[in-house]
Image 1 (tube, rainbow, N blue to C red):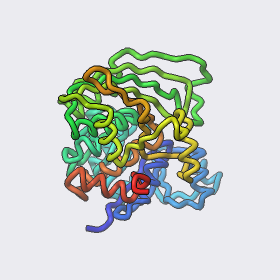
Image 2 (cartoon, one colour; image 1 turned 90 degrees about the vertical axis):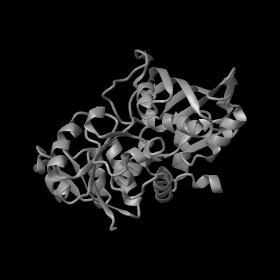
Image 3 (tube, rainbow, N blue to C red; image 1 turned 90 degrees about the horizontal axis):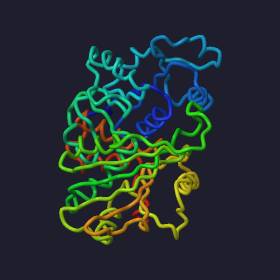
Length: 344
C-alpha cells in the first residue's frame, strides 16, 4: 500500500495544524491545502517558502493572492481529484456543502467538531471507538474539549469501568489572535447540560454524563474538572496509575511549576513546539481526589492542537491503514512523537 494522499480544506487555526500533522506522518502524503483568501496564515505560508501547495476554493479572488505573489496550484476541485481523503476544517456549515463534492468524486473526508453529527457516518474518537471508523467514508471529530475529556474517561473506563461522570468546563472565550469575541471582563454561563457531556454519551453510550460550561476571557486552553463514578471504587493511586500509562495524557504537579494554562503554553514553547502546540492534555496529579466512591480530577485542554492526533487516527481508520485502536493510535503517536517524554 502506497502513501495515503491527503488534502486539507481551510488553512485556519486547525487547518494549519492538520497540514503539519499529516506532513509528519511517514505513511501519508500531504497533497495540498485549500483556502478562500490570502489570510495572515496563508501569507505566512508563502513567506516560509510554500512548503505546501495552495489551492483556491470556489469564489476565491485569485487577484488577491497575486497581489502578494502567492503561488496557486489549482482549484479546490483539482485538489479533491488528487487525494484519497480530505480533512475539512472549513467554517461550520461549509464542510457539509463540501461533502457534496467529496461524494461526487468518491473521496473520503473527515470533518472537525463544528459540523453537525449527521454529516458523517461515525462520530469518531481515536481511543474510544477507533474500530467503528474503519473503512468508513465520512468521519466527524469531537470538539477539542470532548476529545481531551474522552481520553481521560476512556482511560479509566478501560482500566476499571466507569458508570457516570459530571464535568465542569472553564472554557477559553476565543483563540489567540481572534478579535470577533470583543474585549471582555466577564464570565458567561451556558445552559446545562453542555454539549461535551452529550457528545461523550454519543461516543460512550454506556456512561451517563452531564456537565456545566462557563466561558472565561482567556485564550490559551480550557480547564475541565471531572467527577467520575466507577463500577468499583477508584482510588487516587489507581487513577494515577492509569493516567500515567496513557501516551496522550501528561501528568504534572503544581510543585513542578505547572500553575495553570499559561504554564503549559510556555512549556510547549520552551520545548520548541511549533506555535506553542501540545498534543497531550495536561492532568494535575494534585487535583486527583477521592470523594466518597467517586474520583475527581482536573485537566488542561490545549484547544488549538488537541484534536490533531485523533484526526490522524481518523485517516488511519477510514483508509483502513490499521484495523485496531492499539495499532492506529500507536502509529500516530510515533510520527507525532507523542508520549515520548514518558520514557525519558
